[in-house]
Image (cartoon, rainbow, N blue to C red; front, side, top):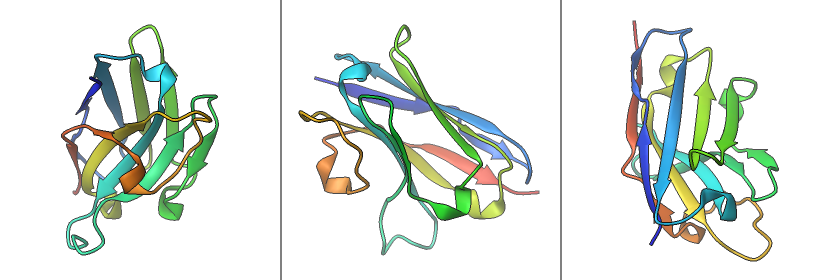
Length: 129
């Protein structure tokens, strides 16, 4: 069974950068759609919200308008990982970030949480001076 583990979070000052990694075991990530979600403190009512997604074909969809132009998602099939580069970080980016995976025939992106069967444990990102 596919297992996911996020890493790379931490404390960073405004304007700084972080590179999050989603490592996989038990299956090959190139066969899955990968989504990044986040839980923003104070928005527990809304739950985890979509940030960005990469389809099996490499198509990328962005869901968090406030982070437009500051995200780069990439696959490293040799390492069986997906990375999320976050630049120009702002205090509003503070959240627990999760990677999630779904496998279906066409492999297209979605931001609907219930359509992702596999989830990592999350990694904390804190942006503060």
